[in-house]
Image (cartoon, rainbow, N blue to C red; front, side, top):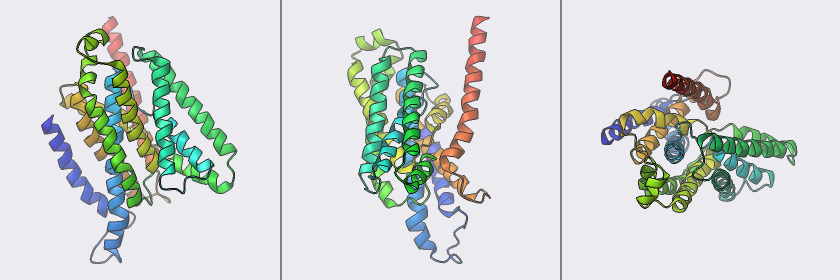
Length: 321
């Protein structure tokens, strides 16, 4: 596991300088006017924010997959990100988004509420189908309420802000967003880390896990807090960025011992690398306007999700033969 972490850290060390230089205008400190200002006030906070958001989403995906014992688990697929987005949309709708603290507070409340509702409906002993249906219901309700908010937006400016923000991006972000997201994301990852032994115990089954001292209620509290903090803070500063929590645990799992506790840190690092590289790529694509980061990652994540489904179907077919 340490080797995996070192490799991903080395790749991050290579990606960060490239991210600082990349863009519609490549920084040339000898020729670009105000290069240091662009670097310090625009490129650097954006790169750090990409690392923070990616780390939170990667760790949340690893924790949810371990808790649900479902390799297809993802905060977005199970209604957590839509819940956070609904909270943030409410802050736009009521005119609170201008505040530095109310927008993330609304998003965090929405994420925590969605996770709590998921746990209430499905319960910690629910099967994969039940969790999936419950998550789809939460995501559907949150999506419908967001559409309702857009339809009845108080003015055209609010509607435009909501739609643009929901696409997910790190454009024009500053140190303020970094200061907001960093402590919350770190606290969320710490919640997953504190729950790591109980997540490992779940591999043996519910009865065996309880005999080893695992307390379902306490574990749910840690996960609700962790997912709410990581996903909520990410949605609050960047909008909806999907599929990171689904992709990176699958990419890192073969290089670990496959225990949830061994997957949290590598997934956080790999998530940071994925979002950083994707954000750098959208800046240099030859498009008229910058492609939104959330759209770019969805274009990558949807085929990956389809590939996982096809691989699982082949596995089930092989087991039946």
